[in-house]
Image (cartoon, one colour):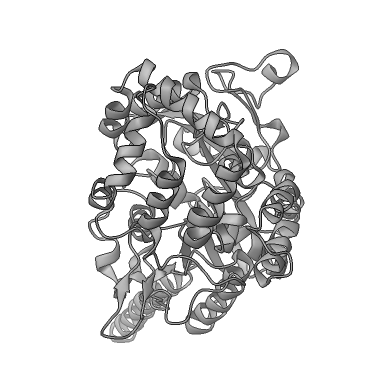
Length: 498
């Protein structure tokens, strides 16, 4: 009897161990794969891909050493210096020709129909998980690769994928490519769903994906990080909203030098600021006079901007929807945009998608997907349009990245009814009530655009939301991680209530 009991106990113990091991293995295999979608410029693009002549199109097509290229262009340097010396006259033709010379060898532009030129593309299209591409994330400290590293820490490298794409192409085409990518991952992993993290322009790709495929329940979680889902007001320059002021430029330089504890290139902004108010004022006066001459503007757009970046669909698609028609009108008038071209068809189709963003976000959530949006704020816009005093993350306007927040102008506070309610930040700068998803949107003050650092509170929040470690709502995150809807990043990369 003892032997029977002993054998029974041994078998039971063995069965228990086998069951436990199988359960652990089963749990590991059921981790939802996470796909990271990067932003504009985060993935290198090449000419002559796959050949011995393969070469990266670096520095937005302006060459491997941009500073040397600029300083080596004597005509450009001389004419720019004349701008800060009022007693000297700038030669506009020489200035424009010098700029045209700077971009003449650029291979960045697409063809007239908005298609990437033959032989160009990405060299690192991976359908394998990051366990096969450790070099991409292992030492990453900032930006998308640091977010990838954080995701690896949360769910393991075999469960994290990076969707690398040519960021110049039409966003709707990229969304189709992402759909194919997701299908292949699901087939390989034998899983029903994935989670998606879209950074900057990658957020716009997710938005286009939702518009075309988002209600088929292929995606468990969406996390948008400083997304360009509703455009960028600096792109209003295509609508001829170009404006310079000494006050806004000086304020911007001061902001960029001091606003971000973890920002980039403060010395560069300090160097420009060191020119002094008077000389900056001279340059501003010249630029505004330059813009009053329609011939100058037409030459600048058609001889410099068009052959450099004028046919890149994704840049057109960053124009806010309420400025798009004006941009088309103005650029068509000067011969910059051909409304019969394939480029126009692409960008028009995408702007229809952009107009449905808020409704699509609400609909995809109703269909059962988890949605989280992180939008940064804390500095003014780039001071080249009438929207220079918008609240931004340096690049993308906070109201657009958050899908509709009401924001105070830079240096101001909200007032009246906009300054009241549970969705208003303590510093009275943001009212999240008007967002598409106010209970699923976070605002991070002083986290510069895509300056998400590895192991920072902000990057951990992105990874935890993507991994499903916490529900994607402001109350759940606050309860579990003590992170409020409105947070400020300190110098130690910790988030505190703002």
